[in-house]
Image (tube, each protein chain N blue to C red):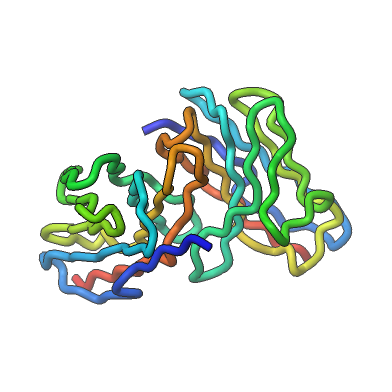
Amino acid sequence: GAVVSQHPSWVICKSGTSVKIECRSLDFQATTMFWYRQFPKQSLMLMATSNEGSKATYEQGVEKDKFLINHASLTLSTLTVTSAHPEDSSFYICSGQAFTNEKLFFGSGTQLSVL
Amino acid sequence: GQQLNQSPQSMFIQEGEDVSMNCTSSSIFNTWLWYKQDPGEGPVLLIALYKAGELTSNGRLTAQFGITRKDSFLNISASIPSDVGIYFCAGSKTSYDKVIFGPGTSLSVIP
């Protein structure tokens, strides 16, 4: 299957700092990138959908000013958690999709711990 | 909103046994996807289904797109320890809808 590279794998930061997570599609062009959040023993919760060159569409309850998403190219999307707080600690996963209704290919996830 | 249900929620089986899990929805879906997630990793795509009645295999895994388009099942034959993980079904109703995920089935294999 197609490969999505996500890094960092884990990050520990102080409360109030910002953290950037990168996702790159290595062998396909990801027209759409999705960002998910996952709490322990729970399913994936979609946070936002971004199409290359457009503003991201955020799910209800997700603060767009707190979770900044950039999808400037067909192979790179970033999620920046601004002014992180302990309640933002979670596992964040990206996925890329080449075309609508096509399979999603996931990155390996980023475990964020905010102290 | 749209919701997928998966059953069982968790299962403990002996190595070598066959496993069956399913995913249901109250709405019609036109795509079903099955993923496996290991702890601390992102989900890995196992099987994708695009047509009602479609039966697709990937090694020891077999998945079917239900005729009613409201369900799908995943079978694993002759389970091995590395099958341990959480299995998610996912689907989309139309070509323009986002993919939603079920709550997952946790599989434990006892050697």
